[in-house]
Image (cartoon, rainbow, N blue to C red; front, side):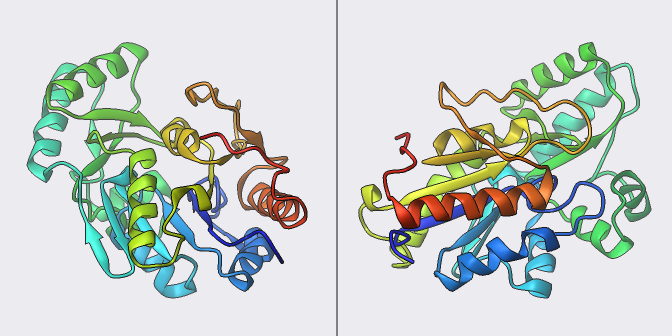
Length: 275
């Protein structure tokens, strides 16, 4: 297959590469194998912790790089970087939010493994990994719109953001998936896994929720995966359009990646880059 030199793929996990209900990626296997056959790096970029990502990757050897906690921590080719905020800042902001809003506020960092497992449907082992957080904290709550507004304002006072993902509002730093994607590309270039010239690199990003918007906006080829349950959110991509996958989760991921690879292998200009 031609025209795939310099291609790199970034994927969100929950609801995108992993099924929303059972966390399976099996439906994505054909496209995943095709990426491997063509030496195309696939990087996970998720709100999950680095411990969670390692757990998944150690079992299945899926990814060439791991970006956790919404871009707060990266590990690529043995190079570990953590641009995210200090844990104390996260904890102080969460405490302030809990005092201000009208509903009880728990979080992954403040909850037991059992509580995290109940909130997520994860096994106890996976729930323990999910609670091993450094620079972000998903809130476990049932907020009103006013509560969300209050929480976002308080987060800002601590130099943080409250970002809505597929399941949770996550308290995190000013790092985001878009910035992390650019850092990852630079690291891959340093490690000579991508061409030295940015113009020779084509980035693909796939995601399903508002916290993927920055990543999709930065990508040359953006794919929005429809959510499995509920309406498809409108994402602010800074004026850029995204391809829409025909199905949710790994099924839509598989179809989209294969279609993009078909286009790029046959006609390298079939999909216009949006730099």
